[in-house]
Image 1: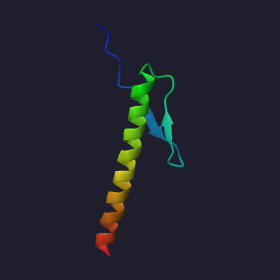
Image 2: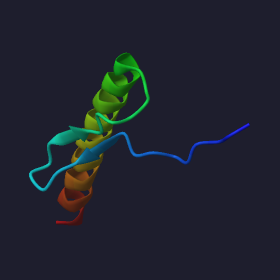
Image 3: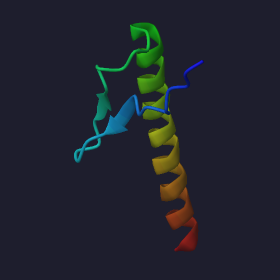
Image 4: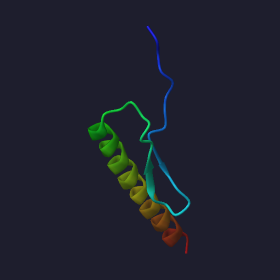
Length: 57
């Protein structure tokens, strides 16, 4: 049995846009889901960071 190494399916470019690895062997539906999850996670982290700095002032 061969185990594939963890491949990065979703990343962000310099402008903060989601980039999907189209060479991935994952289904299109799963890749879309990962892209949406990554986008929402990034937005949540940005909001948490803004809240943290707002509390510091």
